[in-house]
Length: 403
Image (tube, rainbow, N blue to C red; front, side, top):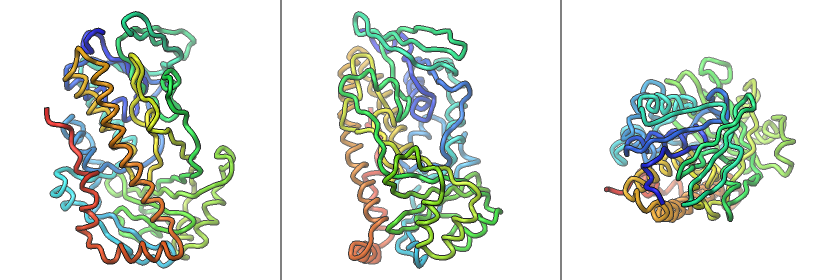
């Protein structure tokens, strides 16, 4: 097989995973071509949390300065009872996080992170981005060469050959369909209700009466949970609530389900939900991370490989880790690409398994009722903020292997 550096790596998808990978490859002297099916780049969703395991990578890649004016360092994560609004626990962030994990804990709008990555990518002659290009067919030739056919908006198509195509094309990945033993995405049974509100709006003012705008706040309830944090220099507040549904995800469009759940919370929280002008339902689909992520000449990263529910707030961070580690391992082993990819996949699956377990534990704790909720509250009460932070050292303290 040819060394990885002889032809540009092809990347399907210009989201966080794809752009981070292109920038990381360029730092290793490896060229790439990114193909995005959207005619114009726009970020789905709203806010995201960037923990230190991700921000240290963004700093090394030169991306963090482009995000500086719009991202925020929250003072803490606070857990509150959704019925009483009582504070259950507090995990310090801000300067504490910077000192403990040697990188900041940030909250940012997804579009702002994507723009920061685009700015860094545009500065490199090794990166070429094409939009309006939908991946339609993949074929493998001699010596594991990959031929990828991309269709343009006008119906024309381009076939491009390389030794490596990386699918960073999300939970509905077209690339994944070409990997024998790859997973299929499935509905998790959870709906995320997203919105972004102005701090000065009636809903924003209502929020500021029940929570500290400078923190990440999670309101816990047996029927739902709500996570909130500031965006864009504190001018906006990101809200995302999670509710289970037994219905077909496509059929859930009305926020009545959400408002009914909030009706069992405090009056102030229920009023906040009513004041929000528009909630966007977002069915949470997952991809089994234990399935195959690679085949000769093909690799999946980010949600294409391992979309998990967001209860550990690690979706973006895992994509960033994937990209940075893959670029490093490809550069270290340019003549033995299959071995590098196999080692990378094994390492990432071990990491994802632990992150998935943490997310499942959070989900159980946040929606606990009865004796389980009492036990949760007792454990949160007896643990100090510092010990709660120490429980996250394995997650936030992760770093790329030293070369």
